[in-house]
Length: 501
Image (tube, rainbow, N blue to C red; front, side, top):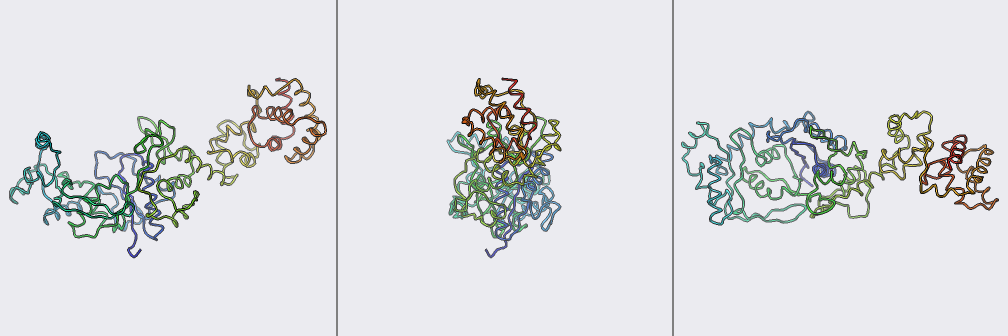
């Protein structure tokens, strides 16, 4: 790729960053790293009515947590700053004037009432109202006013917008890296507003000006922006600039039903759709971080929503993703979000963690339950349970019996305690008391030899033995549990079960 790769993620600070936006940021990041390029973050805050305090900080924190921080952004390597559009207002005003001067744009003074009347007139004729070449010279615009009249209107403080003058009857043949060749008829496009009299540009103008000035080489964004592609290419043409290459990513779809994944889907099915928790007066929207997901697992899962490397491989480090990523392997169709697969990825990353790391993460949960963690070999306990867990938050339910002896017993499992069980358990206590090397493998060998010698069926001992120690027929290898809790505690628990039954 001869052109220096510069790609951007350009969110609006209107609330928490949706997981679809995270994937867009991730694909931009991977593309930049694959080609030795630059990934930068621009905050598109020109719509001040929708601005939400805290959203910008949230976006930056989310990308940092995921390990995909931008190379350039606000207060970081500001080579093409400012990186907030609200701080670039004068730039857009100058460029909108340039489009007026070269005939690619015009002033429109239409009042809301006049536009409503024009809309109704068109609809009465059975036409769809489109503000474009079909009606623009019949409305209140600089196209039918003299320069002097237009200047007088502006000087008087009359509200106006600047609209793009879309060419008539042209077929645009454009190329999208993911979707291939696409074509658009300019006669069907409307004359979009580029600039408002409040001094703020719309997305369309600010986006193109900034991408040009910031030397964006590729625009990688969601497919909802595909209909804007012809307008954006035309604006580049109007300025005499070379357009970047475009790639429109497929949607992330609901787990069930049709349509785009939404917060409502997450609320209904119990999974987060935001990377970090988001608090408002209405409540708290859950985040992947606070739900116990590893950032590497979230990145891995998202990368495979709409892309694969052509193999069956599913587990990738960020470096491996960067090396393998190819926009030509991004799918055209939407990718269905699978919450269970999401958990599976987290499980894969959890079991790769060092036992000590997981023990450190588990420790605060135990402290909340007033467990003195110094009395237990947490590394060992974690090593025995992590293969069955998706999250560290699962650990307590899977291991509570290591820390607290059961006082209640699972009703269904208790039916395994027969009349002959008590004398067998008393014999087992005697066997255990004689064992000096209290390691899992040695205890197992001696207990099984005792059962074999005395022709005692495995189920007659092992199920009530586990029930005594755990309170249910669950948990890791029984003799590993015995080793961890120790001889005295093992015997005390069996005695308690004998008394109970």
